[in-house]
Length: 123
Image 1 (cartoon, rainbow, N blue to C red):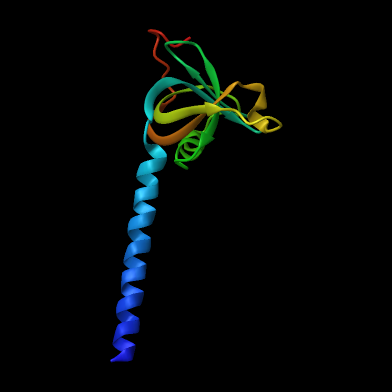
Image 2: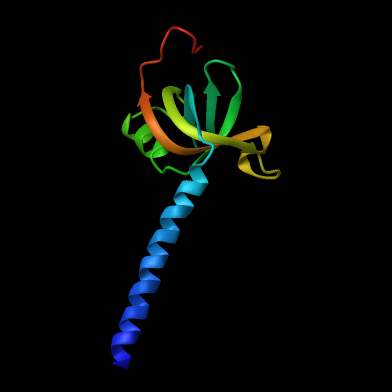
């Protein structure tokens, strides 16, 4: 009887842990906005230039897909590609690689990445 209670308690704790992890993912991406622009990646650069505003951000790739798919395009370091992504702007941290930028774009989801840069509005 006692061992059955222990297994039941362990099951409840594991289930609670799984649901709490799923809830954290939802909370992290809450408030994400879709951005379209030019993404550049290299040894000392991870930048995104928004098409509409021309504003440039440092990039923190929380999706783990942006850098991966950029490298799969076989681009030269620092070469720009067109990307559509969901993310959230945050203030850049001083004394970090992105401190030259006033904002960091935290990427939660990569929607599209391509070598083909649209001629209408992304320069």
